Length: 493
Image (cartoon, rainbow, N blue to C red; front, top):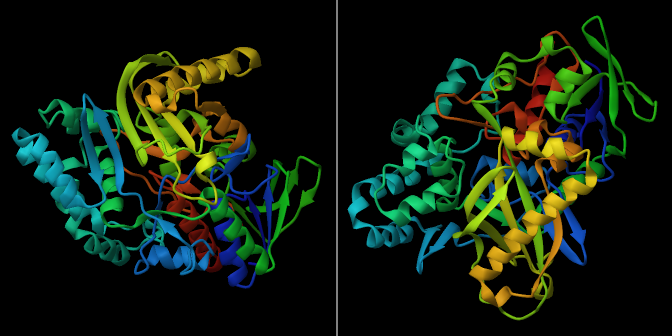
């Protein structure tokens, strides 16, 4: 199959593929369209502050897990690297009542039951199911899409404790899940975090990542993770080319014979791995007839497979005083505000103060994220060509959110500055992200999880790796996909 590999995209999947290919004895070059690596795992410096675009938590931070070993091999985690574990998944403050989804599951159970004894049965079921889902670990040895029957059975057996939770919540939406409770505050904390149509099992599993302690934040955040991966890649002899956008792929006799960059450069290789957005590959560069059937199904059923996207604003806190702010993520009710034609009456914010290398006392950051969907994307996409109107709308929402954050936390009044605003269009511009998605498809009620093969049927030397190979996506899936692509490239004949 030849010994040279060209990788398109220097995000987490591309850097992972590059490292594993180098370790397998290939020579490797990566081509990235932006002026910096990382893809959607990125951060920016604005007005002396740092904005972390990606890592809310990283799954795989327990040393006895296979995921940890993968991250260790990629240079992301090590014994010497500081890891921050937030005390809770998120919390809600409402009418003087505070609820936490504590990392300590029994502490959370006690808090919820004391507030809502009338929901005793459903709350105990929820916490029991979250405990049972601690066994779920994203596979990083073999892709589910490529597993044989025996491997699939072994995977199922390793996660057999999750069966009750899957039965209870696997076919329920977040709206269905919320309606199982009667207490007003319990309903509010569950209703106002995820999209109402998202599968409830995804929410409960996300909480289980916290209670099992696999979810944490490595020092340096998103940029630190990428810089360590890049250092590992280059230490093994890999080469990175920035500012090269792929504009053409030439295919003959079931082989990619060359790819053409925006600078006119002809790039030849024995093997190619596409680690950028998969929609642009199949719908813009090669024939969509090459689409994996599962990937095609997700693209053709957007009502059932929604890209995770949102409007975001980052505020800098202009003081070194201790403002007694909550840690991590918090949601709270607020005056109504409008985003992309939808009215909201809850605000979600995250306090970035846990990593002194990024967020020292004088440079702490607050970010607000408003979840968006495909219809919202159409709204933003319609604004993008009128730059003045587009920017005005982003700033209007930023001001609305600033006022609501300051009303909730009066100690912040006059101490917040806008560092940056981001819409779903931002992620399309930055990474060609389909529908502005910063995470891959999230299946809605009535739609099953899908898994995509890294081998592209009909092309013998082009492979696929990205978070889009699996519903849910995220950093572990992206990193593992790079490994899967190399494993399949080595065995493909």
